[in-house]
Image 1: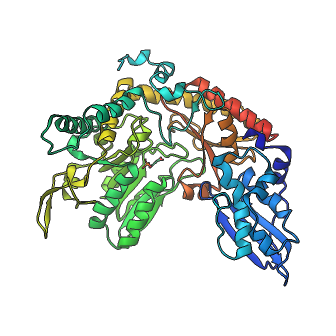
Image 2: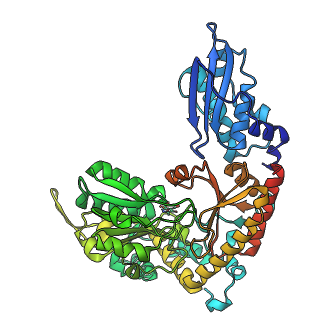
Length: 130
Length: 416
Ligand SMILES: Cc1ncc(COP(=O)(O)O)c(C=O)c1O
């Protein structure tokens, strides 16, 4: 688990990308990690074809949940909502790398769950439980 | 069990009675257990007692005529007598429950439904565990009563200035003896007499006190005292409610069914005497027996010794943590070992408490991180989460050193 906290993770934690709010988001979702109360909100701007044009996230929590969410937002512009809805836990684990312990998996998956929820318009399943 | 004089006791020696503390972690580290406020470890004598019950005399209690049933009944009631003596009440005033939470719920439903009505008030404090808050919220919803709160200041101390006004019109004061997030010890000797004078009954949540302080419910002069075995060397799934005899007599049953009855007809029933009136169904027999052995262990070491030992370790920890302030470490709550149980909440710079706990775990150091089941307190203080280390009789300076070294590692990883 100590391998996990590498420089780029700490950078995403302290300088989260796409952090904040959109003026007029098309879809939004918000959820919290039941284990620790970490909270994440995702806002997407979607064009008429269903393509994600812009994204913002906000929230508060541990380095794992915040960095995972931050990295996720770097890869959603230009994707269709359908493609976003189909993202799997591997999409996150590839980004954040090795070393997530089972007790912290929910932290890593929170951002993805919220993003997928925004894409499908209802609460998505936990990506690690699918 | 070995009996030693208090002065001969040491944490090093006590540790030998706790098999889990001798087991290295998966990473080969010494297990540094600093989460006894969540649940304590168990000594051999307790583990052996559970084992012996299941191996040698497992039988249901009460009404069994054969030898092992009689032996189980005797051990079960004997344990009640020992736990009762441990907190200074008589066995007839001690009801077995699953845990402190169930003990509080028993009072909220049985006593609360019968005695609390619209316009009544229930006084709590702002530091309560969810277990001593949510049951009263539900009671208030059922009855139209209102909740009031003794404030806690930013240092983590209860503010008693407006106490008499708060108590005016109160049916009940429900208060933690020791808070689980900041370790604040409630000055019950100053609070309970004023509650009495205002005509309120007093429930004390002793989940964090009975394991660590000498407790005498008659000296405290409370009406109810709730506590859990698992935080005081005993098994999970067993706890107890003390209530004054006359109050128990007057209270209607809570859960109902077998064992709590005297006579049953198809249309109606009469109920057993307290405490059995409140113990419907087969109890946690092994758990109760283990609880009795746990309080024997604590009494043998001596609660006076345990309290002094924890004060000393807490003092050392506060000092060592103060030296980490340069890395952004911040300790919350009263920083005076005389005023807190062995509980220290803190944060390390901008590192989230869960990340601190994960890094400490790699060094074998077990602490808790989060809201500690006190979400309103966290909101009031403006903390998202805190890390919490808590101490017990088996912890010593080596554990504090391991904590400090692991925190230094976390500070290094996060470049603080
Ligand atoms: C102050 C306090 N009250 C009540 C409880 C609830 O104890 P249990 O979960 O054993 O019912 C706890 C447990 O953490 C506690 O610390």
